[in-house]
Image (tube, rainbow, N blue to C red):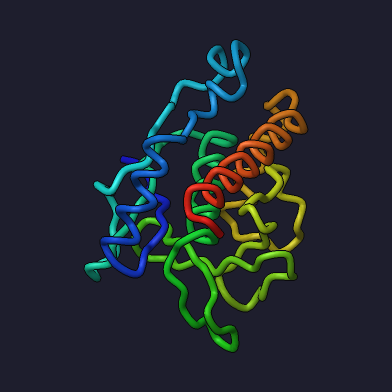
Length: 183
């Protein structure tokens, strides 16, 4: 048993455009972290359209099936946040219009609040313009899941280096996306 995190897209064409981009440019976390990463992270998943836990609707998706702990799962979330911001479907969340979002396990939609405080009355995540969010989970009112994940932080050495590596990877992907899609 495991989990799925995914980015919904408006249609198959949008999903296929992103999937083609990701197939060409995606790097696993262990590769980004070099030799140290290959020793410590074993769950090098690649994005897929074949998700274990999908919403019942026929929405087009890209995401990850995983059963690993933090920071590997955090990296998968970051990639999904990034895809949602760059090309993902938008929806309205109680008082917030046209918001990018991700779906967790086919049943929870998480609104992404880009460079602004998140609305704690709905399932939401605060990220920067690249979809980055620190792996430290310092916010007081995080979901129970995120609080549990933060317990692993104490066992992870060099969390700041991992944060920086993931942030730089999202910036790299953004630059490539802008070049390839003339934004």
